[in-house]
Image (cartoon, rainbow, N blue to C red):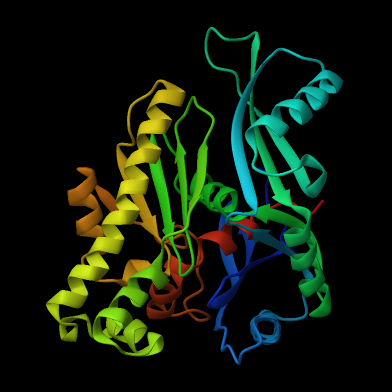
Length: 341
């Protein structure tokens, strides 16, 4: 977690509807975009085979590189902020095992765990703030197996939200203007990270996202899901008002989850609510989503393109391509920043 990049590592984000691959290099201390690919998963009834094909297609656009950083997310992953008295490294490992068993919804024997000791707060030098991560072994092993079946070597398995946070801190940063919320609305789930200068990040995956918005349109109009997806993103003005209302109710459900998370963060961290929401993800193309979230939360919402501060050779990548793929790339970009162990 929170480790620097290696130029030879590909960030590979395997989503439910697409695969994103990205690679950076460093050019005089500045991130330079070397390769980027976004390939849709064309499901034929066998998601694994369709995903493997999309991975092959994405990697073929990158080149001959084989070492990748990938990630997992959703109900199989838990990220918790734990606090301990100052302990020795051996004592901390034992305390993490005990405390982790109390706060995660899994059997500790069934998960892989990792942790990061965060900077201590002022006047609390006798305390340790720890970001604790647990991920189901079956999910991680399945991801590794899929990558190896595709001829790839997984060097890092991360968590979506932590990869996004890593990308944000590297490319935007807090600069004393926190706390801020980073919101990545994908197809299957929404990743939320709240971070401030002097607090341990709050991380959560919310199981409401773009597919729920499309499904609401499909049900209201009695049309197939792919058609509803196209209307949502390309022809929203043709969607009847009752279908828009149902879709907006799903969006407001997501916003209610955000409001609850903001309140929890305030109580846990004894700080204020986020001052700004940075919005990214494929669903940001939905018209009026930004304004609806801003109005409901009463906060400024800024669209964030994770590639906006990277050095880009416009002979290799044109501006329309970067604008189109950028919002999809937060996880892949964060993974591409990881250090090759």
